[in-house]
Length: 288
Image (cartoon, rainbow, N blue to C red; front, side, top):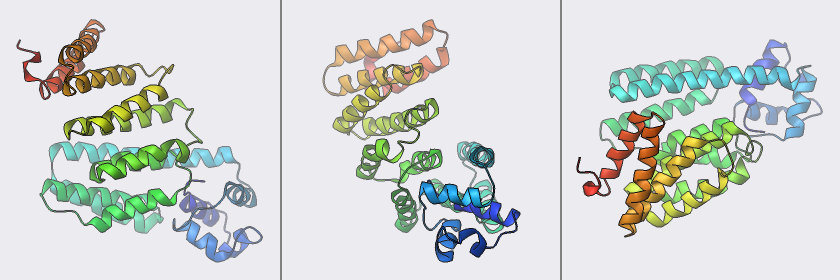
């Protein structure tokens, strides 16, 4: 199971159980303690045995988990709105809020949030990031055997600070690490957004072979899915890649087809964004 020990701790305390009472016959007290602190994971079997010991159904647990996911999304919305404004003072205030929540709840996601804020503050101030902070996130992602939605969000939010090789290594592991969710629409949407961002980064950094591999991988992954905009953007990036690989006319045609279709369906603003981005790679595509 993905690391949900902090929720187990919260439920245990609500039920008035000690670590000894909950862990008896399931795992050692030290193992439960480490699991609750987010230092280790546990097996699916042990996870469900802990829930059963507390007389909590998985559907009840899901309700609590969804609330936690919503809380994390609220943080991301607030964080992103501040990033757009480039307000370092507000980022520092948000970081303090997350520190207080970490101390109050013991939820390790608030620690991850602090790291995310710290890395972005350094980026805004042109200060070199401490590689140890990035390593903490990398180590966490390696430590979780089966990725869930939270791990995908962590990967997506921190990938800007990962090396090119590290990103591609994680991308290659995603199918194996997130098999529990790999058939769900929400998973495909999330991984689609992440991979499209990585493809964009590859194109901008001149990593065309890597971009080509990811485009092929994502195209196969999203085949026969209802994710229309994601598949459309894949075609758009394929056109950009053709331009950079010397097939200028073919690439230009593909890019223009995507833009014209967006205009046709009323997505004028999105079409303009695509048009502006294409100018980075071939300024003479649009003279109007």
